[in-house]
Image (cartoon, rainbow, N blue to C red; front, top):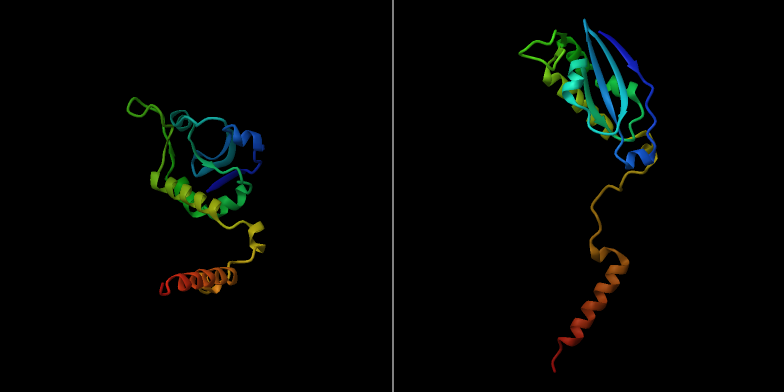
Length: 163
């Protein structure tokens, strides 16, 4: 398998992200076991038929997407299966829009791996202390709430006496 990775990410400013621009992870199936992987910036949804004519599969990625090589490494097995299943074809009357045939389940495994990779804990978050283990304190165990509960209980006991 011959993988060409264009790791240059298009810059996405906060203003662009707020105005609808986003990045897409793209896999261009070139045939003969060759593939080109890149990201691009788009303002509106890509047209699937147009992209299939070029043999490009795409999947949206978040604004925080920064490491294409690491992502490709994580999805390598699914990408190998996808590239192995891809064959270039001449569009015909029965199939006007697709210049490439591929295993749809292999592409779904690639997108699943991509989504999982994006949801992983980021290196910057590794220094954050984990939440304490063990049972959470009850309301009566928290000092300020325990005092308030005692005051309420005392007030109720005083008003429930004989009149």
